[in-house]
Amino acid sequence: QVQLVESGGGLVQAGGSLRLSCAASGRTFSDYVMGWFRQAPGKEREFVATILRSGGGTAYAGSVKGRFTASRDNAKNTVYLQMNSLKPEDTAVYYCAARSGFGLGYNGAQYDYWGQGTQVTVSS
Image 1: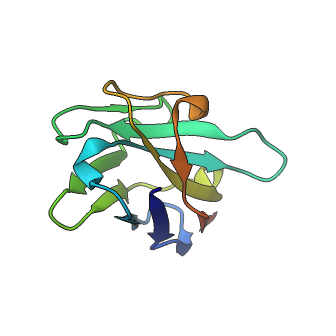
Image 2: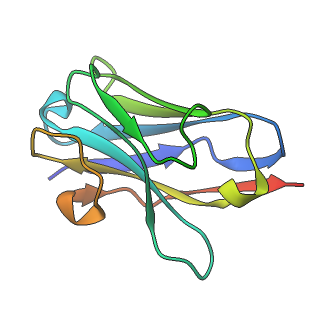
Image 3: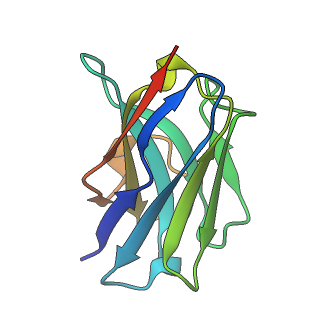
């Protein structure tokens, strides 16, 4: 079992920045590809970003590419999502997730463990 706890969400004005953190416990963190997803009210959960076990590879949804950056610190068992130039349409609950496969994961069904989520609200 892997336990994931997100933090860092909050209320920010459009154009501002936030950094989300996701702390993992329970298993060897570096054994897992990590992902970030989000779900806005009334919408389906959507992929945001994914990062390989070593942190050497990342991928992003088109809507956040160039504004969001995923990173990880395996020594601290933590994955991060730096979010810059935030827009009102980025408002959602953000979830981190862990998958035991090897490749980048773009689909929520590929993930084995999920955090409880953290709310991000961007005001216009």
